[in-house]
Image (cartoon, rainbow, N blue to C red):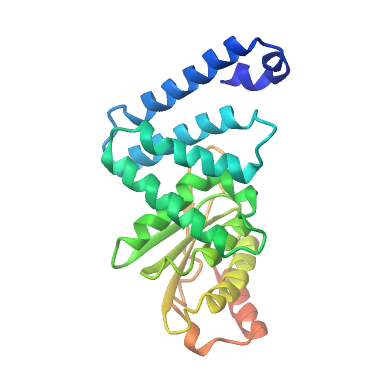
Length: 241
């Protein structure tokens, strides 16, 4: 696949027969990935993600399709490719959630930067939906994670813990300020939501988890601080930590 990505120009010069052979190879690779012996939730999430990107490799070479159309087509094609009903249920739910999110967006599709973490994010949201108290983990760029959370908020009615993976405390503060506005927009004014920030600061791949809200475990959005008070309080917490 790496060689294929690096040689798109060469592939464009290939005969149509060879192109069809290669596309058939990708289809078989997707089916193989989805139907391998993965039975855990994390395994299914990983399988869906790999298969999604296999389809994106194939679709991204079609100049007649937009990025949004690639995404929709890739997800649609995952459903019949798998013989695992659990994976099919995940994919169908995620596809429905994606389409619903698109319908709420004035641009008709989500900011496609967030597609970098698309399968992981939506699988986490799906889990939050099916639990009494969900732990919603948003991966990828914090700004995209916030955007995703706000747009998907109507689905995440049971998620009371929001875990954002960020690179620094300064980013965490910025994230929380935006999340506050996002939660207000999402109609969560009657809920208490616990914000946990994961500081990903180890370059060797070890994620260190710190709760910078040791003093404030819940934020009651029914009695919101003013923006200035909120920011000052969070700054004092991060400095104390």
